[in-house]
Every structure is written in structure tokens, then in C-alpha cells.
Amino acid sequence: MKINFINHTKENIIEFKKLIRDIFKFDKSKTIMNIIFVNDEEIHKINKEYRNIDRVTDVISFALNDEKDFLIKTEEIGDIFICIDQAKRQAEEYEHSLDREIGFLSVHGYLHLNGYDHMNKIDEEIMFKKQDEILNNANLRRDVKWLEAQ
Image 1 (spheres, rainbow, N blue to C red):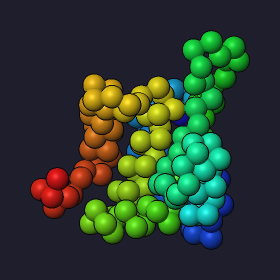
Image 2 (image 1 turned 90 degrees about the vertical axis):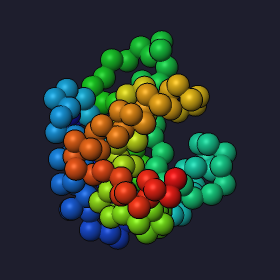
Image 3 (image 1 turned 30 degrees about the vertical axis):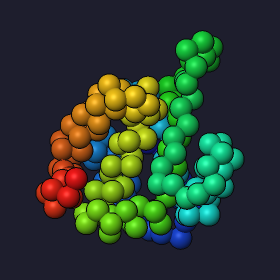
């Protein structure tokens, strides 16, 4: 897999790029995905425009091959927008590292680009199991304190 990174923030994303490339080294496909790092303002605008939700969110994915009848064959699977500002707040709230949060958001977005969803309980269990498997393999396990609070 090839990952293109685009940074629309003032943050230094060098460590995030290394982290994400390490997470997805298991994917030997020839697919391409784009990860775009954004701030609160930009993710809010995207969330309002495309999802009609008027608030900041952490991650939004746009799959290129969302439709079953999609005619164009491409190796590019889509775009993942990650809000670094929100990721920082969530890392603090969940009491884990920013790396763990950025890793989680990138895996969550990747799974959406690959057809996984969590619209019902069964699909949620399947997606979250796969998500945990990928994160655990990348040594980005959930913090025990967070799990105990659930």
C-alpha cells in the first residue's frame, strides 16, 4: 500500500507519517490512500458540508469505490481526513498517547475505505475486532485504565 500524506495544519507530521506507515506495513496490496491532516475549522466545514453535522469530528473517510456499480477501476481507495486538534483532545480524555489516537483514527478510516462499517451491532463487532487486531499488531493497544472505565 502506498500512503500519500497532505498536511493542512501547522503541525509537524513527520512522526505521524512514520507511525502510520509502520501500522500499515502488513498491507502488501498496490492500493493507494491519502491521509489529510486538518484542524478543527476544516474538519467542521467538511462534516457540515458532506454529513450535515454542524460540529468538529475526529476523522472522516471518503471511499472512492463506495458504490457497487462503480465503473472506474483504480488502485486509489480514498481519502482519510484526520483532525489533529480533536485527536489531541481525545488522547487526553482517554488517557493514552497521541500516537495511539492518531493510529486508531487512521485504522478506523482505512477500514471504512475497505468497506467496513459500524451501522449495526454485527457490523460494528466485525469492524472493531479488525480494528483492535491491527492496532494490537502495531503495539497500540488500548490503555487498561480506559478499558476499566467502560
